[in-house]
Length: 146
Image 1 (cartoon, rainbow, N blue to C red):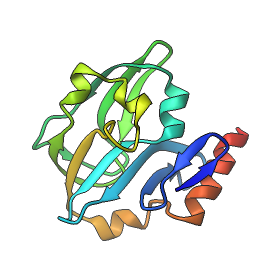
Image 2 (image 1 turned 120 degrees about the horizontal axis):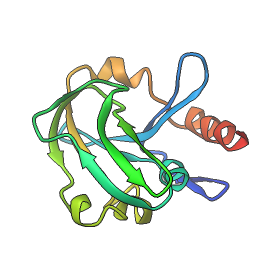
Image 3 (image 1 turned 90 degrees about the horizontal axis):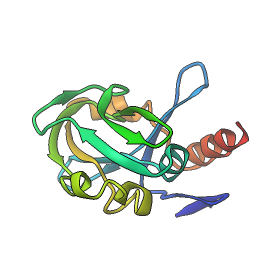
Image 4 (image 1 turned 90 degrees about the vertical axis):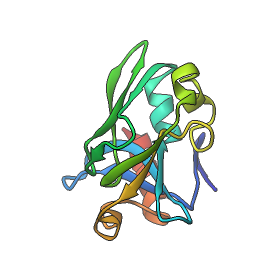
């Protein structure tokens, strides 16, 4: 686990974080599970920028998602917006606990605050667009300068 400023950045995750033009996007993470599926959530920086999460609407199990397209929306006191998927595939599992306690995303963004699990359909291609390791650290450092 790397810490940049006050934000945690687990080194076993992949991050959806930069557009081709260099601008910041998404702020979601992807964890490759042993069974081939991908667990997805909002980064520590993303949840902090959003503020206290009041409501989360996630697409249902069985929904097809594309990298960079919404898997749902979050609502806070200061912002409502999409949650971008870091990978393409089919939603296989939804964290139902977030309906009752959306604040889990703020409290434990890389643990109990996960959002969906996706069965990826073009993982090798999608991983090329994600940040990992030192590239993710540099991305977060740049994001903090803005």
